[in-house]
Image (cartoon, rainbow, N blue to C red; front, side, top):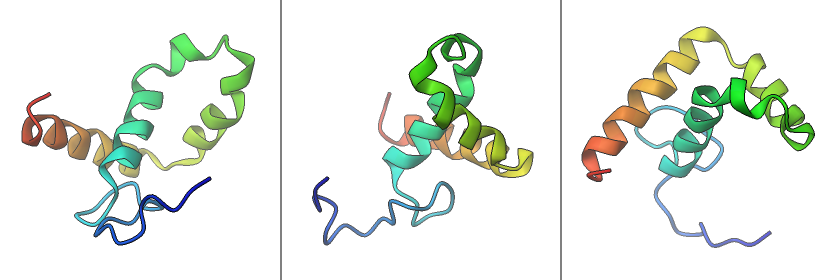
Length: 75
């Protein structure tokens, strides 16, 4: 691991909110979007188990923020 995030204004441990790291938000959104497809991959079992622990309301907030990030960054 590295500390390439040192000095960044975002908090990498947060999934939602204005100070949440965009990469973290997009990571969890990707897992949520593709969970069915990834379920067959044994290496993805732990991340998908962690995804299932995230409350539905927070998962919805992740989707909303990810959509906003895509618009903001033109993706």
